[in-house]
Image (tube, rainbow, N blue to C red):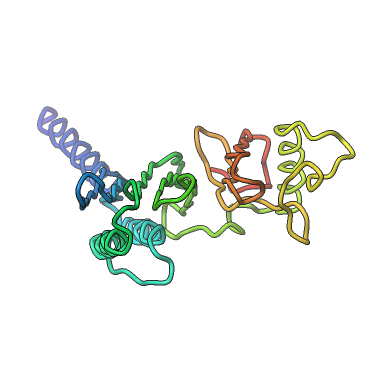
Length: 245
């Protein structure tokens, strides 16, 4: 009898553990690729991103990520999926080559999304984008999307940065140090672009490698030749300033 009770107990906990694993948030990788060529020149679209699975919150997370992916295509149009966005992009390339058959080179859009942070309450995804459609140089960008892990709700910046004033102070200090701007010299004098309201936080802010990352992309605060400005802070140094845990 004792042996039977032991077996039942083991099976009970095994079933519970199995159910728990089945309801844990997991991710799989998805890719999309499309290409058209005219002679030796091609236009291509390549996208890869994580897909959330196994929990009710997954659908909200996936929907927001897919909307952001579509935003990398023409901003004045609405697309229902990557197929329609890619087709429109490739059609535009064919029209361009028809109008300018001697134009050299091809076009490309490449977007890679990776999960860079996961805690009990927060998820962060990093979008790395590269695009070229002629011109002097390609363009690229970095962006973060942050989510409430339990609900799947997208976290706007005001829900990530809890004390904007303090975050601005420590970011400007780190920014000046990164670019070696002398004390007493304004950032405008150093060649940076500032709005009338002064120094500002970048669009790209999120969690990566257990740190809080802020990335200014080319043209956001300085000319293209200045490239990216990537700043990072230990999470324990930002208690009460940014969402944590």
